[in-house]
Image (cartoon, rainbow, N blue to C red):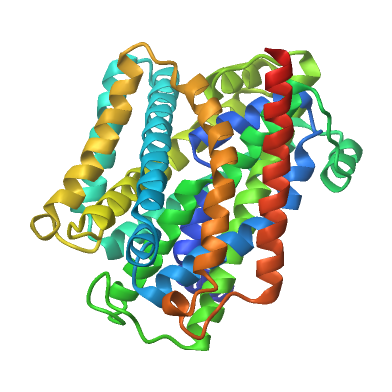
Length: 425
């Protein structure tokens, strides 16, 4: 038993940016979107999680390849080799979407803490905001990345919750392996939101930058913008790490969907606006233990994902305007980077206090992410095949094909949705 434990511990230690990125994709706002999908349509959108795995792996692998081969994040590469207008467009999209995501995640975490411990919502909002800012600024990257990996494992509670809730496994298998598409507006909007929260632009930027952080941490390079010397073994490790992270992410999304499908959808509770509402609905339907697991899972992954979101804002703005960047740097060596990171978190928290419903804003942001990921994927396909950026390590043919499949599938889904919206108005 000790040998087995040591084996898995060593394997876990080797997990890197790919696993952290995959886990961060199932943040509280992602839980909200997947819960809405399960509550409104039962198991019918389950096929998306399986279908998106190879597409997500190929795109995130390209982003990781760009970062590790160039020594720059995506914003830095776009700035150096392509149009500044394109860069500003990408930065504006990312900062807006990430800030809304941060606000929603902090609000959801505070709401769940209030639910569990009964103290006022505002107090918990302040506590989680300050805690995440302190974590981001004052914990050294080497320790910080370990915490992020462990927090990612909190998502496993959704697997347990799904089994506690009880499933119609025949239906689960049917809708997981056989695609089901409806052309009504509500289904298409939910589907594009599902795609947008799974293949999300903030993951593109975060993973590219984190690959550079890993190279700095290992002493391969000294700082961002320094081109590293890598070998094929490094590429293989990155690919396996990224694949594991994306598979893990999508497996968890399946279990979130089937949990809410087996409880909320089955009992006619289709109109939910937050994971808190989903957790409360679970209590009488699946018991206190399922309720507690679902709620603690939201808090745990929120602590992992908010730093990823605010870190993404700090990376792209720093690269765009030439500020010193990096979670591996001390506060006084990257003042603007950490100031932007803190401001992104605080502004996100403030969204919960000024009357904006972050959950509704978030769902529509997920839809917008789905639409705007199309041009960003086109850019990533171009960058990952540019010798100036990746040297001799251009993207493999199979990944290019999968990247174009993602481009076409997301593009057509978004187009059908927009056509239905125009007809509806």
